[in-house]
Amino acid sequence: MKLFYKAGACSLASHIALAESGLPFEIEAVDLKTKITASGADFTQINAKGYVPALVLDSGEVLTEGPAIMQYVADQAPAKHLAPLADAMSRYRLQGWLTFIGTELHKNCTPFFANGSADWKATAMSRLEQRLGYVAQQLAKQPYLLGEEFSIGDAYLFVVLSWMPHIDVDLGKWPELAAFQARVGARPAVQAALKAEGLA
Image (cartoon, rainbow, N blue to C red; front, side, top):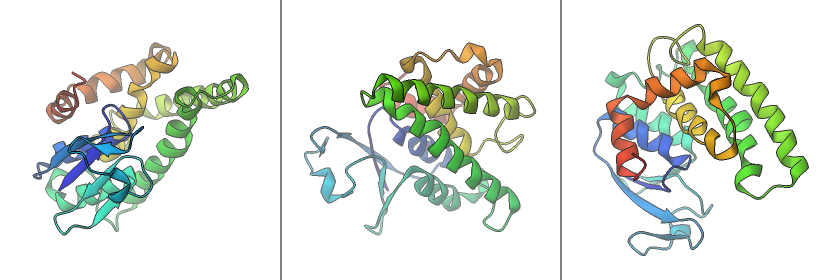
């Protein structure tokens, strides 16, 4: 498998999932401005959407969208418990978290990275802080989103929370989130992914 990524972008969550899985994989960086990969390929021929992540399977098939990629990876390494089994209620809770992180956290960061208007940023910041408070309340009860075990949802949350200092959000307001970042960031697979992307 080969993951196409941009350092520190949402593709880092898929990278962490792959590192946690123990499965063999390669990575290749993408310049999202030029849409050219590190090897000189036209990324739009790999993923017509033009953004990361994209995972090319050994069969040649391409998966896109982080939550889909992470669930696929988790299902290829069931012994790692990165996602509950497909017919378990906890799997639907995981899908709820992946959706929440994608739509309520990730997308509310967009105005800050896309030169949004002041009004757009103010609205997004208000929503973001409210949503972060909700996540902090959940993590006050347990170390990870689904309880005692790390999951792909935690990988995605870790990546989105890592953007907060870049948009002037102080996680110190929510000690539970700061503790979560430290806990997940200390995992060997997370450290390996960060190092591979030049982030550690």
